Image 1 (cartoon, rainbow, N blue to C red):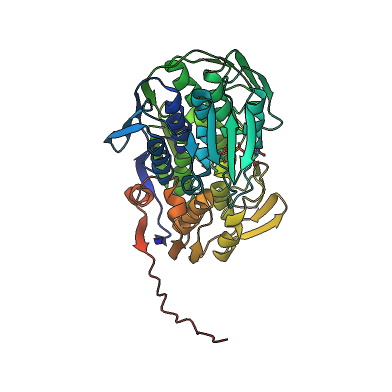
Image 2 (cartoon, rainbow, N blue to C red):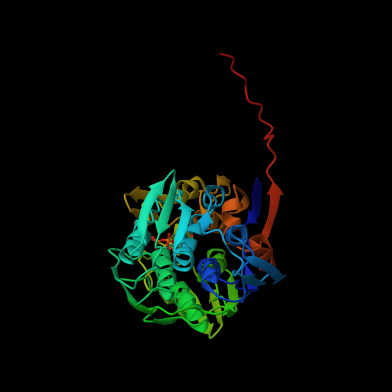
Length: 432
Ligand code: EPZ
């Protein structure tokens, strides 16, 4: 397994480009299953999760060709296997995003039930509830969820008891080819949901209300191929802006969209950071130590849970005490113990973390546990004087394209090393 090694304590300066959003690209790729023609995707990020999704679509029979690292063509007309096997789903739970499109197109699907992950149980019961409301029969079989709708799906009223991003996306896609009208109440409002709706409309779907909590989908006979553009990755953007702030530097991210990050940027200003934006560019810099401020994660347009760990890293060296409430996932504080090993002063009480700002963090050997937790450790390592080694960086590679290259361009001293199995400490064999 690889490690990332950072010589911290250097202020980052400069400009980097945002990649396409992982969490937009994944449902957009799944939507290719619905298209009765080839789809060209622009700005696909080069990430592990994307590779996994493409492997799954190819396994189902779709033709996939890459123009270059960020543009690809998918023709799903040859696809004939409405399944998602365990060996693929276990590496990426977002594989469940093929469920809705598969049932819509083939009238059936067998998808390995995604397990939980470090941040929580991550069930898909609301996805399945929606498909049942649309007339499908759902059953569990040997760890797979089997969904059957031999007469096709029917439009339905679906009321989500809680907001689910991929649940909204899955059922939006399922409804595109359904007979009749589907109404999604309490739908997710994330920009990635809007990107998907825009793309589906472009291919011929009849969708309105996306971006609000009430989405209306009128079923159509078919949708065609076309060109689809992935929006900027707002989480990646904010992570690099935070890298500039935590090191006392000045970072600009281009090819991005400030309207995707309003709540985050408001919090940066509240903490005393300077923010300058134009249509496709955001600059953050600070001349003083940030002030502590509280956050509470919430569905969009609230503070993104995917930025909670990164914001906590910022608050670790802010002036004062901040309270961070994680309301979306039940176990998304895995980064806290690792940050404390770097000298942070954080106390946990259920879904609340109280951060007492310290002047400096100290470099250490730490371990990544999940995608966004690992990003917070990178930020802490950039701020801490000395050498920080982060192991299990495969977590980072799932969501950050060429992270060491982009941070290196901003002046970070960062490199990727292959973790040698021999740590130089010989285990003592204990014989029973
Ligand atoms: C999406 O996950 C994102 N992933 C996550 O990003 C993000 O953290 C999350 O939305 C919240 O914004 C992708 O888009 C691929 P949810 P998703 O369904 O859709 C519960 C990252 O770091 N729930 O909105 O799986 C669930 O347990 C990843 O990029 C049910 O109970 O999240 C959670 O507590 C991590 N039953 C809450 O709802 C369901 O059927 C929100 O989950 C579905 C969800």
